[in-house]
Length: 504
Image 1 (cartoon, one colour):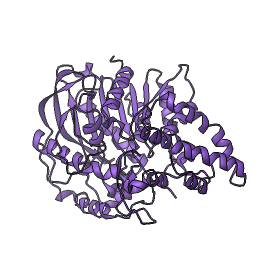
Image 2 (image 1 turned 135 degrees about the horizontal axis):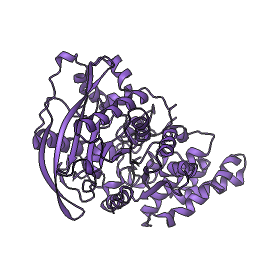
Image 3 (image 1 turned 180 degrees about the vertical axis):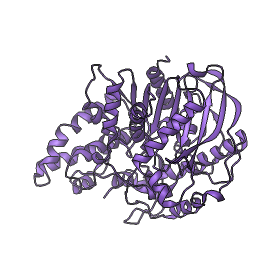
């Protein structure tokens, strides 16, 4: 079975069709209540207000920046011109520059996550604290200047897909699933939203960039290729943050192929090294990756019948992960993510997060043979991000709307048509081949087990050079899925992306 739970993954990654680790089903019931507005007939919905803007400022990169924050909506229409949905966006623009400034469109993942995590956590001009050990859902949701924002070198437009944030459908459940809740339709209507924002705001001649996190990283290459080839919108660059690029490669717990185990092992080792106080960088992780693609594969393929190979494999895996060697040997060196996260701090009665194994919380049922908990990081970040975003939109900006804000929609995730037949790496290759000037960057946290960095490392290694060495840049940073929550990692990300935009 797939070990990453739906409850663990719906925020920023995608565990497509995965069974839950947690026994707690309450979030799904809440999401069904929250989706009632979306199920209302068209005529029963109160119209969204017109776009609203306010002037703000923030200290970014050590300098004060004045900007305009705008919240508004863009209608989604069917082939007959009928409005079938409304997508809400939050845009930050620097006045006086117009089309001469780049504009970046940002998407989170899920499916079922609003763009609030990239907005108020990573690259927007303001941020709310979340994602650090010790954070609690009851902490005040106060927005502060984000010194690692990208706004000083690009305008930013954060887009909430239908069913997330305040974005909503205007058709029934069956039509909604067909029009919005599948990978193909998702790309088509979101590409049109990008096009319509550019058209409405006279930005068609600006340099255009895309950034997506987790399943947003799955979206971005496909959005870029569709915009290029179907809507006539060239994309200057894309950034994939902790992307979910190759679903089949992640495999299952009992996978015969070594690939899923290979992809997970370096992230497990990174978590262990960090607990030991070792720095996470290429020098520390290089030997792990070398072992992973050589001796590990050889011993894995030898199988448990080869006792010497399995003993050697188990001992090395125990050394790298920090787990009990007896436990690892009993598992023939094949340590799944759920076991790793529960066993690394078993003596303390704590469990780690799939997003960052060193973000921990107490196991509410430590004596149970079955895992009965929700992901520590996921359940911690929902409250501050939701409260901060709702206050920003409705109180600070003054865009008044009578609806619940869905930072995470379990309802969308449950209804999503899960078809992994369209691999975004295919569209990534095509998009790069079409445009030799396109800048492509993939970024990961070393500790992330939801979308492990080594999967992207293997993908990039198999790509052609297109005549230019290192056409796709790959960067890793200390931290997990939301590594940018760590100030040093957020600052390093900003520096690397400025280089990709030519802004250094």
